[in-house]
Amino acid sequence: MAETIETSIERGGGVALWRQIEERLREAIDAGALRPGERLPTEQMLARRFGVNRHTVRRALGALVGEGLVRVEQGRGAFLQEEIIEYALGLRTRFSENIRRQERAPGGRLLDAVELPAEGAAARALALPIGTALLALDTLREANGLPISLSRHFVPLRRFPGLAEAYRELGSLTHAFARYGVGDYTRKWTRLLARPPTVAEARHLRQPMTTPVLQSEAVNIDGEGRPIEYGVAAFAGGRVQILVEE
Image (tube, rainbow, N blue to C red; front, side, top):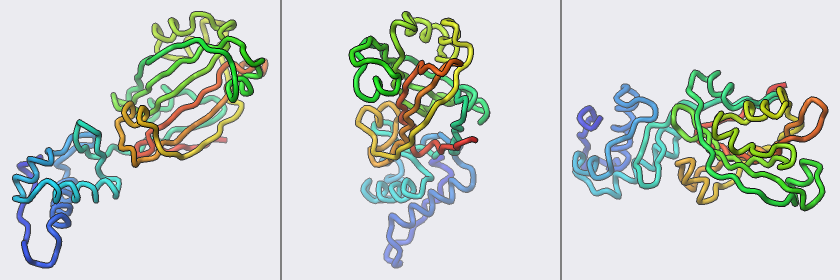
């Protein structure tokens, strides 16, 4: 892209240099010089081509970030923002189906699996006595290789022993539940919240600390109305919008 950017800027003309650089970058983006998700030239490269310092370039990029055209990943650089994913929440919310509906490839991995006693919100949501053994699965889900959500799923350990291994093999909580005779399950309730990300969330989701995450807290139940999973997910706020389906 660097070769296709118009680099002529006027000094002393009353328009700030960073503002002119912002406009030149916007023109290149509008002309299709970058594909969604593609990395922009580095600050050093842009500073050299425009004949300015990196602080000036950084301010121009910051303006594009503020407009939602560009995102910055710590340690990786600036990227042209992808189209927003519309993530549907309904009676049956399935990550892979949601992503395929957007004509993207779903993916992800299990980050961690730990056994712990039920307490607080997890105990209440699963209607279990304090201290009941739970399995907590930490997952990172992606669309076309880009992180979309970071989640922690709590399930009753006694009912789903070995669920972590099933998830690692199948890559899907829905398919893993099916191995335990839960062929279908539905959403009992969902609670949504916008909040600042934690350091770990920003790192896994590859987003700035200044960009909020969309938190989804939810309970899924089996056909008999018994809670099988309580989950808390943080969605990348700059890439996802939530659609609540009736």
